[in-house]
Image (cartoon, rainbow, N blue to C red; front, side, top):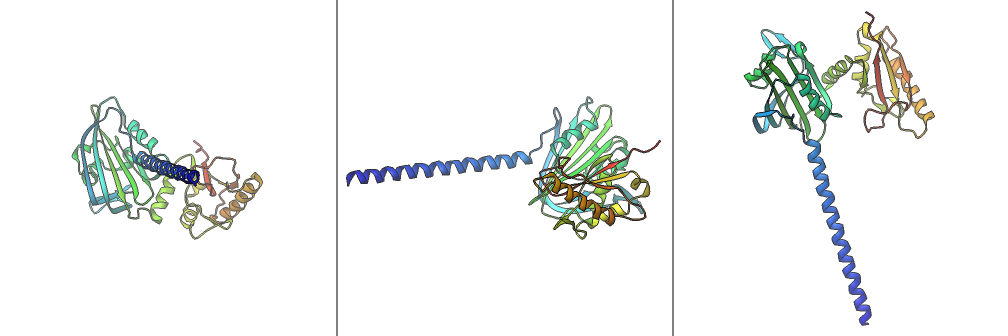
Length: 308
């Protein structure tokens, strides 16, 4: 009987020890997860930049510009804007003469890979530097030559959405400033007009991936993909003549099924976007790696070089 009691006691001690180790392991996993989340939200400062000022505000209104500027009745504004509520962290930085605008933009864009680019511009395409400095960022020190500026707005969707807005300006050979805003907001940012602007902005590149392709039961969901289809259908003829589209499927475990999927979707897309001109659409299965971790069908584009 005594041996039985001792054996039971040992088993109980082992169980408690195992349970304690389990709790400790879970705690470590939790800390690691929190650390990863924080690391994912962290943006590294630009090397040797001087932080001039920093402000933080809770539940504030934020004017988010998502397109090129327009001027109507002596008032400048964005063609597409959103007024959102959220927590805003604003940083104003100064840099020495040994740096260029593109270095600042590249530094942050490299950290925002995978984020959704809402809008970007540079130089004269950004319009009035006075508008950005005084109407958007309320900082006269950000006012410079229109040719020496850049603006980027990106978003990582989530609960809440995390939005980064960068504005860089070179005021003179000796002065380069940039403003970096970080906004956490549950408000909707994108809609059909924003999606259309993003597609048109993407198509200004020579090649890349187009968003908005939705597939249901092996066919294009034309209702959910309406913005993409209408944008492609209404492109200028000069772009259509140079445009080539390629659909890639990744879901199947064998290449034959992926080719069959992409060929079927290519045929449907070709018919859906026909408007007095047939844009070439091909199905290439999984011959190209997807742009991210999502293995749903993806749409890639290439623009044939202009003939000079």
